Length: 495
Image (tube, rainbow, N blue to C red; front, side):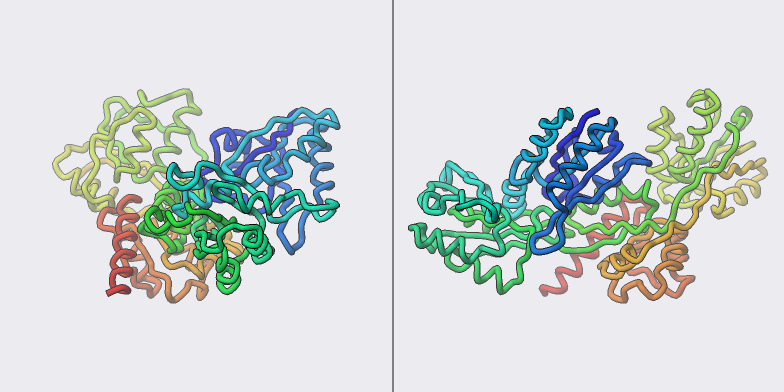
């Protein structure tokens, strides 16, 4: 039994440490703060108990004594308990108090540091908190002290003459008073300053000014927590070093309708390009029960999706078989995603078409002799491929491996999708089930991105014209098409 006090970083899920992800996946209980990335909690195992214990300045907050009692009780009961905290647990995170409560109760604990907002948010804003020419020291300061203290512990007069960068956490509501105090104590009112709201998140905002003007500017811009303030010459570096806003999808909200299990690759690519990804999984892939197929005697085995490859090898493994069961047959994959799924099981596809649709695979097989073929696919897949092979005189067996079913979408999912700038569709089933759930909720301003002609046809059947169809019908092609469209639209806006 151990309680792990784990830093989850400031918000961007890519800043979660490997150790944090390992513990989240193994935890029996997760007690988590506000602003924990959804991707972190998605990594929890099935059956783990998730308990919200977030705090919000000026709003309803969990009681710290109650949080500590929960940690002691769960830790004493055994199992793996993860206390998931924003940023770093020991940097203005009250992790020290929670560790003391556990130590006093005799409950074993470990500390897992996280990336703190005071470093990460300025970095994402293009502001180095130290710089050889501008600041050889940095001070991290809380702008919100314990109100029960008899007198403030922060010596603002000393900080006014501190020869380096000041990074103030939790000080937005007191920013006016803090800057006034620093100026009164001798810090230059013309010193560059910045406030970073929701640092590292896709909707990060940076407000710039001087020590004298920053509080009024932040107030007029409606800056709200979470935010950090940076005072010092390094704040002027932003003009040269900003990078976060320069990514091709910065400020663009993209809805991903793919099944949750398959969405991660697309979501990760979009986030890396600056997109604010909204996952609205409209479908779920359900493997069909069945024995391992007898593959002997086939001279061609066709896989028409990565899901099909995964389920096929699951069946083989359950029967004590492996890639050797495919020996003697040519293996065709409908596209690079399916080919990659086969590679993970030790199979290199013999045939991968240039066009990643059934028609493309038919063209690629035109000169390939086929006597007996097995097509491993979804239950509701089109019959274009088996019909074409049978027309050539081949004996064709179709093996349904999985079915695609609708994933219920709650109001939160639908509201997020309604605000999206782009909605991506990666199959006709994502079109069918998403539109059935969203109905009129699909925002009229959203641009529809289709992975290929079959998906585009499904949109047109429902009276919607895709704004963009990927030239290459895979995830990489879809991302390229979306980025190109976003850049063209941005260029038109500034023309």
